[in-house]
Image (spheres, rainbow, N blue to C red):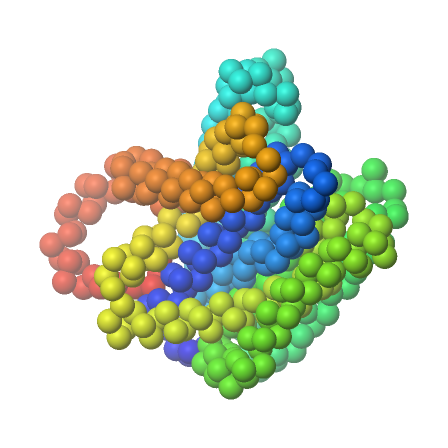
Length: 412
């Protein structure tokens, strides 16, 4: 799919697969965090071993950013009505962001007081100030992604202008973006920890919520969808090299954590598993490339007779993937409370991970699917399903327009 073919986009089934894959990866990463947080020190160092392999799944955040660049470019590269873009995108982001933060804050306080959870840092007495802090900083409930995406919306027209204006220099844009990202990560890993940033602006010193900390992945997504056939052909020709390289890179994350970060640099466990590292940039690119290749095979399978139940699972999961991200804290909170009260060994904890993961996925999907199907809750997951002010207009024009309406990728 080159640039011109975006004018009449076909349905790319691999996008459904990739969106679902990356949200499931995000949930898995967060489930692992819950299990390691509830483990205790033991002679076999089970917690440390689990942490040492957890960096393997830290590509999911970058994959999510990549997919955001893909989908936004696919939908808006040839649509330059930016006022409509801002209205639609911010209406679908700001309200879910505010409401979920408030709802999850309330739930956390109730659970904390009911179970006397000493981990709880929230209280009714400081509700107002706590709510303001978490919406300004995106510091809780994994809502940092929402702040990043809303920043991306602000600069997205400029990004599209960049690719339009330098239409013959897309590879240069990608390469420059890569090296900027690499420099950013080197600074984040080796420089900033040794600098006093206490007086810096929060948005700069906490680069987790800074859109420019992920700029390459958005640009990589844009580049990929604009040069789709070129990229996928390149991958197919080199898959015999890329696949084993990616596997080795995945294994290498364990060595990177256990030896380089922990022993050579003496970093804390938290900083050692941070995704803001030069190695993670290379590894995330490799994984994204492989998942794109797998997604293409999924698309071919879909077109050649995939079981309908499986295609429905993928399609419906992709539809509510954003909602699953927003509501995941509810399932994770229940999992955390459960793990605190079952008092089992760390080894048993390891065997419980698949069960805990399945539980969180089921809860996250169930809530998101409910919001998607039941009016008026669709707006909670960025998919409004109740438009009372449009009913009159729609009823008058439905007969005239029904014959003209077909499936469009822009309804994705």
